[in-house]
Length: 93
Image (cartoon, rainbow, N blue to C red; front, side, top):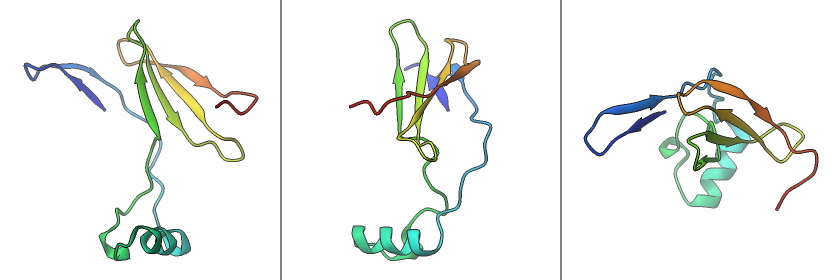
């Protein structure tokens, strides 16, 4: 992910160091059917994250699904360095 200024300058780059998961099989077929698409028109991979928020202090919070949990947040500092993951113990929202 790149944060880019209106001038076009790159302000910050963040890399998610995990491989994308393929979107295949029954999951692909059911998603295509529910959305009314041909399965061949869907992307080859599942989404890597669900939501991105930037805090007022510049920290980047990237929400992703967590197996067996609702979600987790990967937190990056204003320079783009990974600070850690936040996994809520209870369901929020």
